[in-house]
Amino acid sequence: MLKDIYASVIHPRELVAMLKVKLSSKEQNRHHEPLSKLALQLSDKAFCYASLNKVSRSFALVIQQLPDKLKDPVCLFYLILRALDTLEDDMKFDTEEKLPLLRNFYQYIGDEKWYMKDVGDTHDYRMLLTHYPKIARVFQTLDPAYQDVISDITKKMGNGMADFSVKKVCTLEEYDQYCHYVAGLVGMGLSDLFAVSGYENDALREELRISNSMGLFLQKTNIIRDYHEDLFLGRSFWPAEIWTQYASHFDRFANAPESPDSLACLNHLVLDTLRHIPDCIN
Image 1 (cartoon, one colour):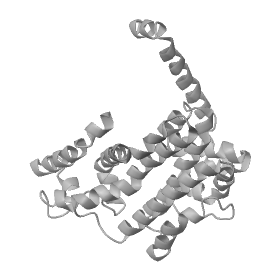
Image 2 (cartoon, one colour):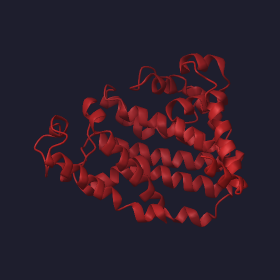
Image 3 (cartoon, helix red, strand yellow):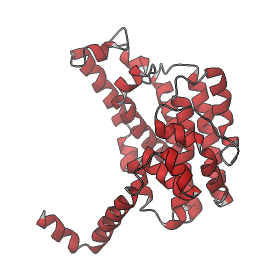
C-alpha cells in the first residue's frame, strides 16, 4: 500500500484525482433520508443530485469529476433517461397507456406540470417520477443547445423502447438494435454534450459507431448479468437466436445454471459481447 501511495505522490495529477473522488464520495453520503423526504427538503437542483446518487451511485461519482459546465447537463441527461427507462421497465404499467407515453415523453421533459405516481419497480424510481417537476425546472435552466441534445436522444430512445415493448428480442440484429436504443444512444448523446460544451472537438459527434459500440458493450453486459432478475419480473432480453440453441424454455437456465448447456449459452452471449471491445478500446 505504501508503494501505491508513493507512486501517486510522484504523479501529482493522480493524487489530485484521488482526493476529488474521496471528497465527492463524502458529498454523496450526505443525504441518507428517502427521496420522498428529500423532495420536500431540498432545492430542485439539490434534489436532482440526491436522486442521481440514489439511482446510480457510480454514475453520480463520475459526474462529480466533470467540469462544472458539464455537470448539470449530464446529470439531467441521466435522470431524464432514467425516468424514461422507469416507464419502460415497470411491467405492471398498462401497455396501452405506456406506449404513447414512451413515444411522447420527450415533449414532457421540460414540463413542470407533468409527473406520474405509483410507476416504477423501486421506491427511488417511483419518487423520481412523482417529483419529476423538480427535474423539469432544472432542465429549463440548461443552455438550449444542451436541451436540444437531450430532447433528441429522449425522442429516439422512447420510440425504440415503444417498438420493443410489443415485440421480443429474437434475432441478433434485433438484440443490437434494442441495445442501441437503450444504451448506444446514451453514448451518442454524451458525445454530443461534450462537443456542444467545447471540451471536445465537434468531430466527436461523427464517431457514431464508437459511441454506439460502447453502449452496446455495457448494455449487453448488464443484460447477461440481470437474467434472473428479469426472469422474475417477467421480461427477457436475451436474443432467442442464441438461447434457443441451448434450451427449449427460457427458465431452464435458472433451473440448471451449471449444466453444460447453460454454460455454453452464457459463453455464446459473452463472446457476442466481446466483439464490441475493439471499438471500446479505440
